[in-house]
Length: 245
Ligand SMILES: C[S@@+](CC[C@H](N)C(=O)[O-])C[C@H]1O[C@@H](n2cnc3c(N)ncnc32)[C@H](O)[C@@H]1O
Picture (tube, rainbow, N blue to C red):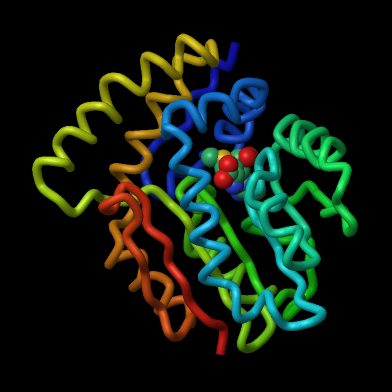
C-alpha cells in the first residue's frame, strides 16, 4: 500500500518521490483503467498527437523521445513512423511497457525504454527531432525545469508535443465533466487499482495545472517558438506544440 500521497499542487516540493511510488503502485492496472475511465478516447488523443508530428516523422533519420512514457502506449504508436526512445523514472511502468513491446512481434526497430528523470534527462544537448510527453508534465516537481530540459535535448527546428489534461471550454459540459472527474472517477479508480490516492490526486493535480493559455505562455517563456494548442474533446485535454529555435 502506498503511504506517500503526492502533493497535487503545481511545482510541489518533494513531489517526485511520491509520484514515482504512486505510479509503481498502480502500474499493473494503469492501462486497463486509463482506457476504461476515458472510454478509449485517450487512444484518439495519442493518434491526433502523431498526426500533428507527421511532417517531421516523414523525414528520414528522425529520432523521437517519448518522455514520461509510462507503459509505452505513445512510444508504441510512434514506432512505425520513426526511431523512438521512451523514458520514465518509474521502473514498474517501464517493465509493463517492455512486455507490451515484446508482444508487438511485427516491430522492426524495437523502441528502447530507458529509466530517467524528466528534470535531469540522460541525453546530450540537441539529440532529438521530436519530444512527446503525454500526461506527464503535470506530475513534475518543477515544470519549468522539465520544459527547459525538453528544449535542451531538442535539435534546433525540433518540435515538442505536450498532451495533457486541461480545462473543458463548454460551460455545462465542463460542470458535468468536473462532477465525473472529482466524484465518480476516483471511486472507480480506487476500486480497480486498489489505490485510494492515485485517482484522487489526478483531478486535483489537473485543477492545479496551468490552463491552455498559461501553459502556452510557460512554453514561450522557456524559449519555444510557434507555440500553439488544440483542444481535444472540448478541452478535457489539450495538445500543445512548440518548436525549438
Ligand atoms: C499518467 S502517466 C502517463 C504515461 C504515458 N505517457 C501515457 O500516456 O499513458 C505519467 C508518467 O510520468 C512519469 N513521471 C512523472 N514524473 C516523472 C519524472 N520527473 N521523470 C520521469 N518520469 C516521470 C510517471 O512515472 C508515469 O509513468
